[in-house]
Length: 269
Image (cartoon, rainbow, N blue to C red):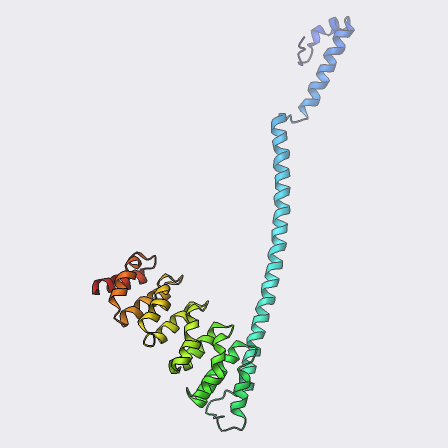
């Protein structure tokens, strides 16, 4: 039985007074209706959605707080790394000036013990110092046997820049024996620049059989610069039969520089 919530008309109040139970129910319904006027009713589905949104926003706030803390920590680490690198750079500058006395218009070649000081610096922990020592010794002694004696061991240096400096300094002046012992192993150096430089140095020093054994495999090198140089070495040696057999697949090489030189060579043969 649905009871209306409208007020009881005055003309009927006397009748309700004669039926107390009905009058009590009407009054209760009127009280409930009055309370509902002061309350905003929200469907249960919308209420649950609001709770979920509120929970999601709180989780997002926590996540952003963690991200902010992480970024601040990362920035602090980067600042420390930058300061460390800056300090290392300044230290190297001081070492260079102190140990080599790099000053304009100053000649230390006649200074007693200068050569010994340079030779000692070939073992310096800093690769920059070892590199400068190689250049200094070459400037002092030229590409002599004495120079090669001191700096050739640095072809096995852990830093590729030092190895490259040694090759530039004395690689061209190696004897046939030194070529076999020192240069040819560098064709397998982990740094592509060293492999490339070594091929250029060996271009006129290897026999055909040595080229087939040492240079042809480099046509499949992982570095396109090495593949390109290997083709060029074969072309300079006028080994066209070998070129025709081996360079053909490189006309489809992923690197356009290799495809270009391969197609040029194939047109020549």
